[in-house]
Amino acid sequence: MKAFLIASILTLIGSCATQKYSDKIDILKNGIHIKDSTAILEFSQTITAPELKVHLEFLANKELYGRETGEVGQKQASEFLKSYYQSLNIPSPMEDSIYFQRIPKDYFPEKYNASENVLAFIKGTEKPEEVVIVSAHYDHLGLQDGKIFYGADDNSSGTSAILEIAEAFQLAKEKNQGPKRSVLFLHVTAEEIGLQGSKYYTEHPAFPLDQTIADLNIDMIGRVDPSHEDDPNYLYLIGSDRLSRELHYISEKINNTFFHFSLDYKYNDESDPNRYYYRSDHYNFAKNNIPVIFYFNGEHEDYHQPTDTPDKINYELLEKRARFIFATTWQLANMENRLLMNEDF
Image (cartoon, rainbow, N blue to C red; front, side):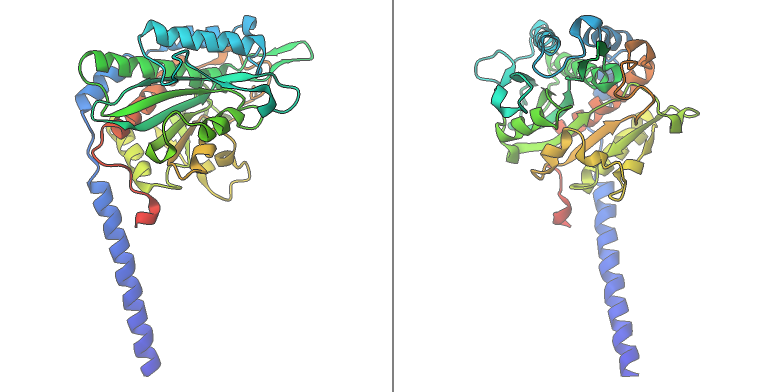
């Protein structure tokens, strides 16, 4: 009888603890309110398929020879990014105002030349010292056996999305609706050779890492993988709940309010053999305890092939996905408090 009583008490305690945790989650979910729905809709609509196509076709054209780290095509791409931000009067956070965070040759494996990350930002109106990062790598595999690896989806798609997201924020700023926190548009080099550009950034950050709210990383969002050919209205999200469940719930709220994607978390499973969580630039931020989301359309037959060309991009889908990421960035940049971390529960 005594043993039964003790077991009953322990069960009750466990039940109460579980209930308390679930109550916390409910409170967290119910406390998420969309910031400025009208503005999100207005400025997200400035992200358009035709403009994305213009950016992407330049980045993935044959004259850039596949944008291999340290080579002439990658340098041309970096100049294109710099000129774009200058044309919109979006400044660089770098002290020399040249938009480039230069990475020396000796940082990379022996065969690669010096390279550069490209940084631009919009200063926050109320909490400028805090920053939300939107990142994407702009390098690719270059020339191999005389064939150009164009990298249209990987990752001209993510790079083009950032350009349109940046323009949307700048248009908002010009209408006195700039973000409360700073937003950093981070184009990293050398992803294809081991996430080296983002690693260098986290070792030499333009903003202190402890003031970095989140990293939203975009790597391949212009195509449809074989698993979703019958329903292309999807996007894989990886890492959204690993460090901050609040980030995950914010993302879900944004999607359910505006976009209605089928968000697929298949690759977020810690037992997933592909280990995508560790394979793109967000991971260098996650290692520093910064909440992340990795946006991804999955692999397809042209992944890391010379056939990954601009004509195969679904530009309308790219537009919708970029708008979703813009809206999530807007929410993070304008919410009152910093994200709650999982250890806070």
